[in-house]
Amino acid sequence: MTTPTTNNSSNSVLDRPGYMKPCNGCGQCCKDEACSLSVKYLHSEVAPCIALEHQDGRYWCGLVRDPAKYLGLKEWAQEWAVIELSPHFAYALRLGAGCDAYYGPE
Ligand code: SF4
Ligand code: SF4
Image (tube, rainbow, N blue to C red; front, side, top):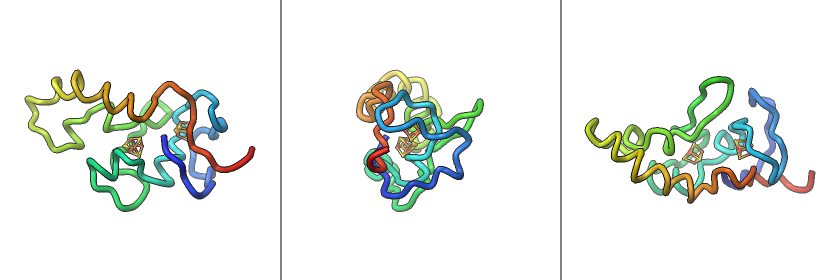
């Protein structure tokens, strides 16, 4: 999801799969560095990202799963936000394109 500068995989529930391998939700990237969306919309200054969620044995991007919650929108906007905003965030994060957390040659 981003390009962290350290490799601390010891906190992961799952092992990081490797650069460009299918993302398994290990969450390492978001623990190490808040992505550009997190900085822009959530004003993150430190990691782990406040939108990083853990469920069913893996990590998820809360900004994609529940944008209204993290953007501070009214409850009535929750469904709208999932329909209108989640796809844009998922596209910006290139979800489904593989792990883009680059820690150097592996
Ligand atoms: S992008 Fe990579 S480091 Fe980030 S959660 Fe997915 S597999 Fe883990
Ligand atoms: S906004 Fe999502 S992808 Fe970006 S750092 Fe936070 S949890 Fe990770």
